[in-house]
Image (tube, rainbow, N blue to C red):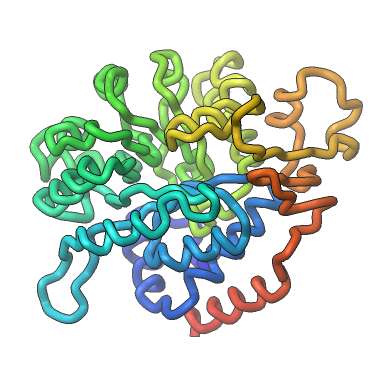
Length: 362
C-alpha cells in the first residue's frame, strides 16, 4: 500500500515523518488487501513462507488463509489506548486469544510469534511484560534491532548498556529471537550472540535504501550464527522479491570488503531457505521425506540464463529473476502454475490497493 510513497529518506525521517502518520489513517480491510497484494508478489517471485509484523494481524492471517501461503504472524501485545490518555498499554489477553485462534490454523500453515517492535519504541517495563508472556506462551519474539547508528546511540543512552545486553536482562533469549536488521553490531555483539537463541535477519536492500548501513553478515556467518534473509516491507525495499534480495545480499559484502569469497551463493541461498526455517522452528526449507511439500519450479530458458551451465544454486542467486518462477506449490497444493496465480483475482486485489492508496494521499 505504501510502496514508493516515501523515497530517498533516512530511516528516522522515513518512519516518523511519513510512514507512521500515513499508517494512522489505515482503516477497515486495508490491511487485508495490502497483505493480499504482498502475497501475490511473493508467490510470483517464489516465496512460499514469510514472517511479518504489522498493525491488524487478524486481517493478515485471513489473507494468508485465502492466499494459501505459509506464514508466521507476529502479534503485538503493546497498543495505543485510544479511549483514554494512558498512551501505550499491555494487552496480554488479546495476544493469548490470537495465539489460540491462529497457531496451527490453515492445516498448520500459520504459526504465530510475538511482535516487540523495538527497544526504542516502548518503555522497558512494558517490554518486560511482553517478554514474560512470550516465555509463558512459548512464543518466538520478532523485533527490530540496531538498524541505524542513531538507534544504537539512543538505546545505549536509554538503557545504559548495549542493546543485546538489555534484551538479555529482560529475558528475551529464554525464547528464540528473530532480530531484523542487526546492522550496527560489532565483534563484541557477535561473540555475545554465539550462545544465544538469536536469529539475525539481513535486509540488505532496505538498509541500503534508507542509508542505514551494511550488516556484518560475513563475520556473523564465520562465527556460526544462523543469519536469515528478508526483504523488509515494500515501503522500504520497494518489493518483496527474495530472488532479487539473494542477488544483492551475496554481492554487497564482496564489494564492501573487497573479498570475492565472502557470503557465497550457497550461503546466501541457505540464508533465504533453511536458516529462515530454523529461525521459525519449521521443517520447511528443504526437500526431504517428511518435510512439507513447499516447492518452487523455475524456468531457466530465458536469455539472461543462457547458456545455463554451471552450479544451479549460483545460477539462481547470480542470474535468475523473480519472473523466472514458473510454478509454486505450498503444502502440496499448486498455488501458481505457468505464472498464473490460482484462485486469486489479482486485478481486483490491485484495484483495491490502488483505491486505498488514493485515499491515503488525498
